[in-house]
Amino acid sequence: MDVHIDLTGTRGHRDAIYRQLRAAILDGRFRPGEALPPTRELAQRLAVSRTTVSAAYDRLTAEGFLAGRVGAGTFVTAFPVARPEPSHVSGVRPLPEWDAVPAPPAPFAPAPEFDFRPGVPDLTRFPFDTWRRLVTQRLRAGQADLMTYGDPQGHAGLRAEIARHVGLSRDVRTTAEQVVVTAGAQQTTDLVARVLLRPGDLAAVEDPGYPPPRLVLESRGVRVAPVPVDESGIVVDAIPAGTRLVYVTPSHQYPLGLSMSLDRRLELLDWAERTDAVLVEDDYDTEFRYTGRPLEPLHSLDSRGRVVYVGSFSKVLSPALRLGFLIAPPSLVPALVKARYLTDWHAPNVEQAALAAFMAEGGFARHVRRMRKVYRDRHELLSRVLVRDFADVLTPLPSTAGLHLSAAAEFDTAAWVRRARRDGVQLYSLGDFSAGERRHGLVFGYGAVAAERIEPGLARLRALVDEGAA
Image 1 (cartoon, rainbow, N blue to C red):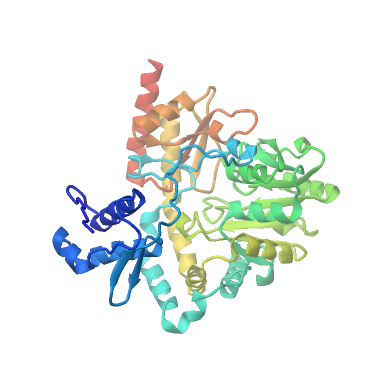
Image 2 (image 1 turned 90 degrees about the vertical axis):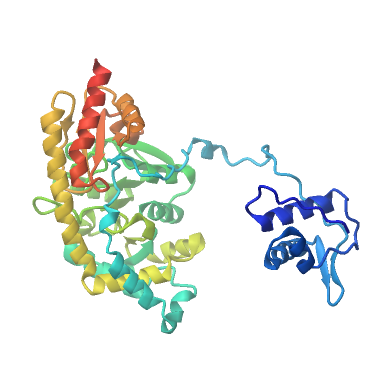
């Protein structure tokens, strides 16, 4: 067989050899039963390593194009069924509701010059050395049990540490048996919807609010009603009749930043009991509270088993860990664990064990204290600059916690946001979080932007605002 392979200008020699041999076989240039040159001979002819040629042969053999005969060589087989070339047209279509779901946000590479995205922590201060040590310890040979299938409910040690942590920090009375380790608020919403809601059932979300849970519910065929938020929290009287689930962020409303008043919390709990509904309470970043004592979570005020409490480590440590948790009434836990098993079985075992050790040895609490001061300083600086330089166009909304600060405006700020992003200032409009009536304003995150970058970033934004108004 005369094999002609052109490697001129190619960088991946193995892939080039594979592609050209495969094309020659499919084009009929080689007959079944013909022998290929020995790998050593072809490698010398092409001036590449024998390993490179062997890898190309191995792939063609695995796909049925070649067959090796011991002591005889490598031969072209009877032609396998040729796979059609990829087509841009497909006859398979998803359900129509998926057309309305926005595409996931693209990762920022490189990061924006001035990164005011909300909900992103300062990853430069992640405890890399400690985490590396804890993960390495869990990967020793004696920890082989972590490399098999895990408990859908979560690592027992981590569940115990989570129960202890929320009991001390948030007065959430629970046990490890009520904790389910999840990938975060979105998965929790999906799990709760799986075990409680059918397509066509009605759920409610805050408006403005965190979009992913609303999209999760809608993707499951649940009807979702946006409910307005006032200075006391979600307006209970505006929740539609027949609502079976309400997703709320009472301790630090996302994105407005306010805290739900005690009277409103009690009103919401009473409504849930009267209507036989469940409340999904996302307590997502209350570790970072800067003044005063936080109000009790809905879970702590709930004596009737109506609240599923949700927490996450994404804002405190890193979104890449994909670790969060829910605390559910005992009546829901078995079904939620089954749903977790059917969805993706369990969270990564090594990361769970490392996080449990991190919490047990006090590293988590120290990291929270350290970062609370860092974020408090940025919060205060951002507030001062907004009051000083944007008083004519923006009104900062009261906020004493979290990783973002919102400011209201009298007009749509979407054009500002688009112009700012083009000029290296990444932030969001309040309208980006509205499902019903659109709120006007801006949302400034301060987790990912260093303190010394806040004033220059806001100065850039102010210049763009003035330029647009001129």
